[in-house]
Image 1 (cartoon, rainbow, N blue to C red):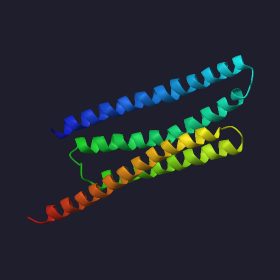
Image 2 (cartoon, one colour):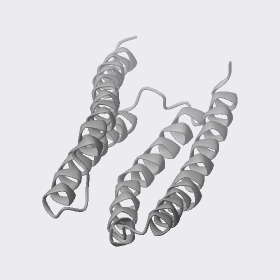
Image 3 (cartoon, rainbow, N blue to C red):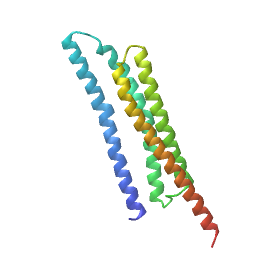
Image 4 (cartoon, rainbow, N blue to C red):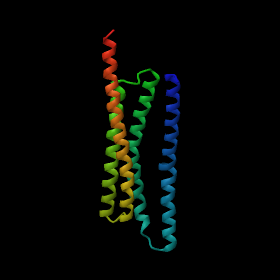
Length: 164
């Protein structure tokens, strides 16, 4: 498969991922929150309406590192299309994605604990959030490993360019 075709496929996947992110963060999460508020109003307990905005802002904040990682992935796809697959720039971008994934995982865990301390969270939600944190760390490890491998390949390519 030629480089331009790979670039187009990667960018199509990234556009799909961005659309999924917009649907989740823009439609599903606010909709689920409103449904919980309506359910709570029907039960006349009045607990969740105070949670809604705290959680919505918190979850929207977790989307920011995802957007930054998306931009890095878009640049990587562009570099692949320009036949610069094994470059220091791609290794650096993969390293940024790893750092963003770790940062987002830590932010998500700390945010859940802080919301729990302010009585805006349930302990079972904190336990469930550990799965999300694990996923973020797994993405970070995979991106860091790819970054290392791409950097090594770039070094080998530089060495082979100097030897004829």
